[in-house]
Length: 256
Image (cartoon, rainbow, N blue to C red; front, side, top):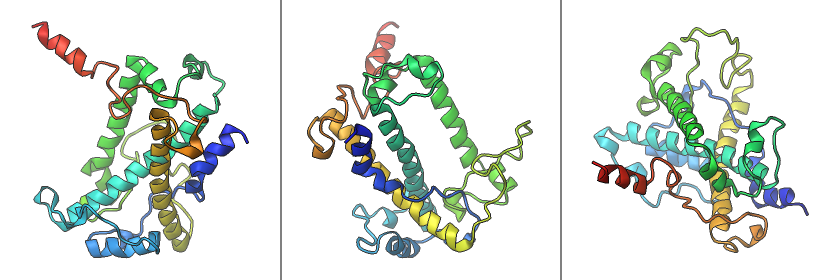
């Protein structure tokens, strides 16, 4: 069995179904803990609602239940979406798959996936951080949301909704997530897609951490033993090898 197949079996079950696009059904917005409990039953009837840290019972920044629940749900969905990208990216890299352009060949295939980030030039890291930061600012801003007739997710807005770029004049006729216009699927299909996306995101987070665990502690995940390249860096300190490193900061401070 090839490494690709083995890696996919270890967690690819998280990816049956498609990632749903931002939707417009107001009734799916979770504004209270009670609605979160009901959603949990749809997501996993066996486990149901599970909140061991009692996060939904807290009052984040003294902003009330709607703010707290909205913040929690948006955070989970955002982490899940990124994890799905990371999960697939890890499989692609570990199997040596490369795009035909020259940029992809600048990094050695002998490196583990986390080591690729460490080897990325400083200017490349800053470009990634800047782009992601701008996208996050756009998603959090009231103006583009209002332009789409939406509100912030902590104020009853749609969880996972990303504003369009209609307010910004640009020559590209398409729009992110909806390049060919609004989604034409039925409401039932949209509802199913939202459930699939959350579950896929949760499984992707677990799968990605499984990859990282095996890379950091070889043999810790028996199903992945021998399939994941080892990594000796700091997994939980992704900026340790660049300008953000503590040693670099200390060197700067001692120079004054």
